[in-house]
Amino acid sequence: MKALPENNTEGEWSSSLIKDLSFIKKNLRYPLSKKTLVPGIIIGLVIALVLRITFIGWTLKNGSHRGSWATYLLIFFIAVPLVISIARYIQTLKFIAIPTAYYLGENMQLLQKFLESERLITLRHPDAPEVFQIVSKSVSQYKDEREIMIFIADDKRILINSHFTNTGFTIVPASKHYKQMGKMLSSWISAHTVNTGNSLVYKGF
Figure 1: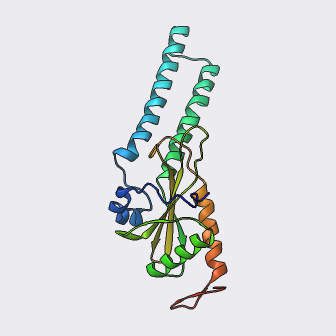
Figure 2: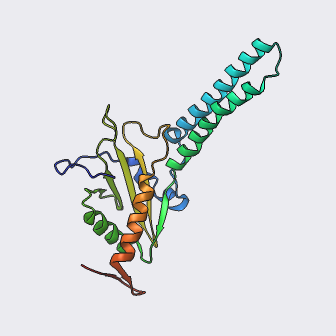
Figure 3: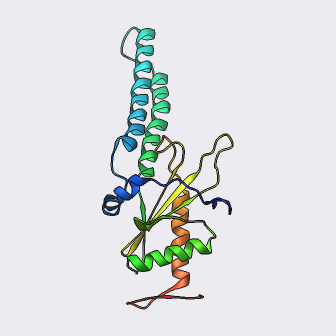
């Protein structure tokens, strides 16, 4: 994950994220809505259309509903990637939880210090101070498409998810960057804090 350029303080903020914050903390995923369901429905329709066209094609060719092994193999190679796309899309809706020994306020401090140590520009909102957002540089050569990574501080855990700008929740493979960032955060917490049982103590600060 790359930080925004030093002279860029702008970023997109999803108001729906703040509205859905309680749901996300409880279910570790974005709630189902028109915005989140449409891409999955599109994938399902594509699968149905491909299977229908293939079915009609072999029926016209063979004069029956029986297809050759090659036809079934073709259906398999078409359907499997589409099914995988659905599974990967579902993953983009889910948050991973990084366990910590600390409560909300201390986890907010941890996130702030971690992101500062990585020199990442952080966007926050006054209505949801426990939510941190970072925006990558463009990941596309052809358009301004950026990865948005969301951190949510909570009691005893920090939640992380990411998605891409300009396309909303679209048919794309689930980004692995937030999982990598989760591992980095977990390692950083272990290396820079001491759990005293009742307070947060930093090492090396």
